[in-house]
Amino acid sequence: MAPLQFKARHPHPEQAGCKHLYKFAALDDKHLEYAQTLLENGRLYHALPGSFNDPWEAKPWVRPPEDPNGLVRLRNILIRGIRSSGRSQRQAERAASKALAGGSQEILQRAIDETFGEALICCLSASKDNLLLWSHYAVRHTGYCIEFDARKAPFSFAYKVFYQENYPSLTYPLNTNASFSVLASKSKVWEYENEFRVLYIPSSVSSPGVEYNDNLAKLPSHSITAVYFGACMSKEHLQLLSNFIEQGPFNPELYKAKISRSRFEIEYTRIN
Image (cartoon, rainbow, N blue to C red; front, side, top):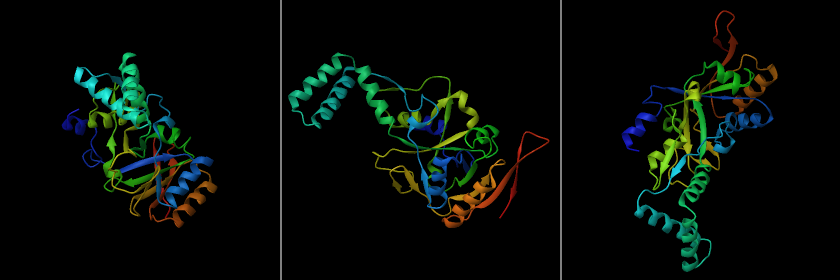
């Protein structure tokens, strides 16, 4: 994929005209720990694609090499991988030849699925007013929504998700832009989420502008600009989140959501 095509499909927030990005979350036991880790400790959780609710995440269809040179490169990669497990050069060559004799498609598909499955992703939206996101990810408006400054790292490095009808595919040898595009592409049925993604590949030498510790990104103190408490959040959870914020490094504006009685909209009242 050419760089200009990639930028057109996956602009960063600034290029897309977004000043803020939003993350919706529930408040069950597991997500309470995530909330404390974020609001009190300043660490943003990133998830593996295998934990997402879309089973097609990060699973492109891989086309084998289309020319003899591509097959030679693939065989050499297999040999290096087999040699790294302690086998001799001759053993590695035989094993690679045997594997390719059974067809390169399955080998490539398995390797790509494993590689892409290790990507760490933080999913965000360009809107805090999406009723479906409040209902789904904030579980019937009982959860909350975090507003991040999209001009600051790592959010300034987020990629806009591209929604498409065609299933994503890759051709070996892999193109870096095409590979990243797969991690930021989804079916058009998800278009209502208006999603951006922060992508971190642990094996990569680069990161989106902040320090990572496993699947947690360390956020600067100015990263969170507002927190919106769901319209149906309990008083106990509101107080608990408020305590996390008070003990943490951030100084966000706090808002309580309210369901409009005359329109399909959410209204927000500042409470600090």
